[in-house]
Amino acid sequence: MNILHINKFHYVRGGAEAVYINTASLLESKGHRSVFFSMCHPQNLPCVTGDYFMPYAELSADRNSPDIVDQIRTAGRIIYSFTAKKRISRLLDDYPVDIAHLHNIYHHISPSILHVLKKRRVPVIMTLHDYKMVCASYHLQSHGKPCEACYGGRYFMAISGRCVKGSLVKSVLNTLEMYLHHSVLDIYNNVDVFISPSRFLKDKLFEMGFKKKIIHLPNYLDIEKFGEFNIDTGEGKAVRDKSVVYFGRLSHEKGLLTLLEAAKILKDQNRDFLEIKIIGDGPMRDELEQKVRTEGIDNVRFLGYMKGGSLYREVKKSLAVILPSEWYENNPMSVIEAFALSTPVIGARIGGIPELVKDNETGLTFQPGDAEDLSKKIKIFLDDNSLSGEMGEKARELARREFSAERYYQRLMEIYKKLLQGDDSNAG
Image 1 (cartoon, helix red, strand yellow):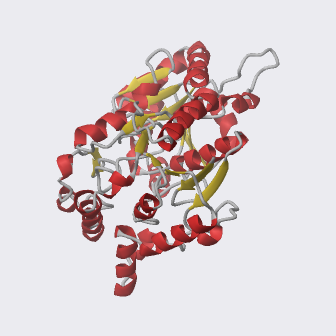
Image 2: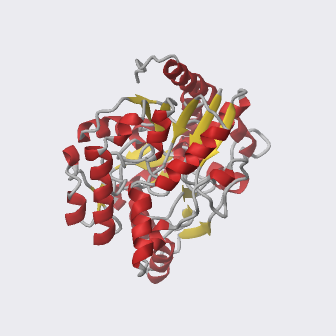
Image 3: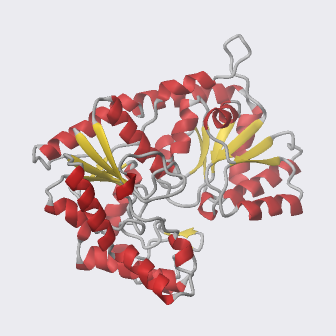
């Protein structure tokens, strides 16, 4: 089967890109052929179809440009890109495909490509990674709090709330985009099936008024490859430091200020021998580091961006991974990775996190934004080291059972084959 994979970035920039690239790799390992369409970027992985990609654009920068021509060009690309239609048409002329699997295409590519795929009768699947189908700002969040004001297609609420990065101009542009794509063109009606990695996202989109066909299919990991990162004493027992770890993007919706407040509480309780490690980079890093310095939170250490073995070893030897998010997380890969490493998770009780983090089984949950509650949950692991091993083993078993590559592949192929056979009765 020839499969067209589409995502706006062709390198691992975040969870969506990891799913996009890993899905293609998995399918290739089963004998299928991958064709890619994305945007040119200095960090892109090598790709034979790279010449067809969209021109590189850093849209967040362009939209602040004083040049009115740049602003108009950027607005056009976001709302409806004729360049994307031309480039994907040329790609399909040279690389015919059986099916298209889309991920994040907003802004840098635009959904204009759906009209090309529909005209060529290419079945289309789209994996959802956020709430862009119902929210101009992607996250169902406004000013740091969950927000559902755009319920039922009331996208204009994003303007009054300046929901897109606090900018009136960006909020207006994204609102116009939403009305054009959903109310005027109904352009996503050209997608045959949407895949939602969490039940929460599927249910929330339906609740907000998005009535397209959505199938629940969680993300996957090659669970077995994580076994090589075991750290033990030579007697088969994992060695765990008195530490907890956050790893991921350092941005406001991730609840990292709450984590720092919890660190202060633990320090005040004379528990500064517990080390809280923050791994990653992002727009909030300077603010977080400044807060740690100014307030003397010396039980927190920033390790910067890490990946692969160095990251996984830090996770494996910690008592728990912390996910203090304050937005509606979907199916966070960081949780599944922690589980694959036999490490339990302390996660905020929000979005899709409780679908994975089961209290007293695969970890513990706490009230989002509540530093006191978070500190209590960290203290539970600190006071009883055996819990990390016990819950960690249950977490790994869950990952092996529910998030394996083989399980994901078999379910995905069922979806593909039904669409190719003209059967739209997929259910999830």
